[in-house]
View (cartoon, helix red, strand yellow):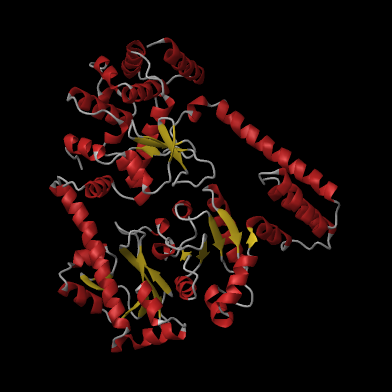
Length: 579
């Protein structure tokens, strides 16, 4: 939606970037800027910066950046219009809404409200005569009424139209029921999608009911049925129970496999449990978890499938700065069974004994080999060395190397040699990968986001410089009278240029924070451009870039790698010699 420029300017002015970010990140001032731990990728050393005078944020680690609007889009998973609406509410401003925006946001609000009403309906049915089977099931699972209420657990009657009729009476249309994935359709007639199932509402971190998970009570299939993707539900970006677990004071989060496990853990006092929604852990899940904790305890089944799941999850979690431990179940198949058999004190001991991820992975490696066989022993040592060589300190490598040596019956010195060999092989692989990057400048200069490609690299580099210089020194835009967005080889950069130029001509603010209608990834890319072109430069350098763009449009040729390197060096030199 295109909001009036004057409204956006006032919105930005009344939502200082340091105040908006400060709601989520502890910031400390250092000179003109403020720094804190990045909320998007998890880190130990603060590389997340906020520049109050420019109204922008930028992370030097994950390279996300933008203004207040973009920050709300990233941190809360909002669309651009919804982020504007959120900031306007924060500042007590009325949003000028056109019909297109009203229609889309109204659709989202209607689906949130519909799901909430459906959750109330399912909850009421659990305690109605029709829900007797469902109530018996949850009571058999040892769930108390208070925990059922806390999670909003309900029951979908064994009926083809109970929910449909109830929601129609509430004023919801058949199309809305389909949009929320609450119904199926056959021969033009809709019917309840969830039937004879215990229902678990899926609630996002903002408290909205966005979908449901249903556990069947007969021989029907599938055993577990989740809401499919809708405009308000994405299973890759949400975790069951996180709306409650994010408030936990435990200092860590427990990641389990099922909804019942989560609920039982909360009932027994472990209010930090969450579960994925019918999918393996994703990078989006890991990034979401990193906002609320620095440590995750994986509680997967001990079978081969559980080990594979843990092996996939560990690097994703560590990539966003989360410490990982792995809990090994004993005498029970899952936390729900364990807690009912042995109680919370015994489970607390399991948590305290949970191994760090290296212990867990070394144990998993050892289980693959017969250490009485010399050939298999050698393979065990070699695979363990490949793992140990990835550890980030020589002390860790020595400690775990010695442990493997003892298990394999070899000397610590021999194990150290094997780890060093693996370490050198890893460094060699990384060196070759870096050499490939260095020898392919065109590829190295390509944007990280998949939706944008630089086909004409010479023009794209000049276009980047135009954007970066204009954001740093808007008055330079007066030297771009003959340049238009259609002259740009990269549509994204042309769009940004057009917005900046129009604002400058109208005497409005020109800054990163007021650029509209970009995705979070696109805004981060523009923020990165601004950081790379940190020197304002002068009008001559700016005009040079304009001429490059216009000339490249005429010849429409793509430069060679050598020309690209020369152009990049020339532009670096122009920052220091012109202006």
